[in-house]
Image (tube, rainbow, N blue to C red; front, side, top):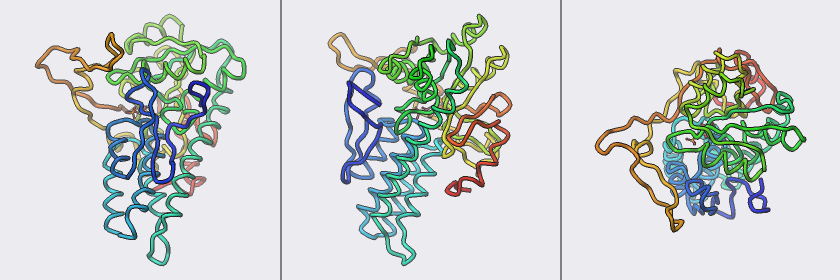
Length: 355
Ligand code: MRU
């Protein structure tokens, strides 16, 4: 994707350094963060300098490759690093999928380690992520009609992946193919990924859009102003239940009430066939300050964080919820568009899926 006319991926590797777009500063500042070792890269994931399922997965893959480079054939070091990387965030399946692949690729049958194989596998994962998202865009575009108004929740655009995005990829494809599309971007409290990141992406791509308060969706749907919802996912269970950013479940319930199609777009690497249903998906609980405080530029353009809640009250901050498969119209993957109950067919097709 282009930023100021230059092509970027969300995350890439230069030598032994992982380079990332610093997402905590967007849309106010565009900066590249350089993570010099696997511990830096772990910090980048846990502090959400990078976020979104596919981007987290690629970053974790690169972190694992860095660990092989730093580990100097020390099995204990590499195993430890693997655990640290896996402990950065619990919900996005792509993280576990990617770490497993690089960890396996870096072990030779001789019992030795191969930094070269590990680095190659990490790059392969990043490239596959971008390719899958491009394909999701092409397939998803077929569901979009000229003139459609689409609501989305959180950011499942290119910033949430290596490139293209999942939920926004069909929107970009539709817009580029000349269709008149309009997006309602839910602001997505508490961290505002919709208001900050989705809106920034859509503006860069010249896609007509507005930011709406998280609680405005039902009203717009009741007035016939939303033709479809497309959201991303952090983990999809084998039965088609979908974990996504907190607030998604409410939208799915309302969409069903008003007969509005509710699509989930995600690469096959987000499906966890080891999770029988959504109740098995770990839901991340994040710090209460994300709810209690908000940040943005002050009059001098300097980023500041201020309290926006009643002093002394605590907050609860579950980061994800699970939408049952029966509320999902279809899941758009790079391998096709599936009824959520029919995902099992992908398990046999995808030999790298963990089970
Ligand atoms: O907490 P985040 O920002 O990493 O959350 C992940 C997400 O961006 C969303 O849940 C998104 O809709 C799915 S991930 C592509």
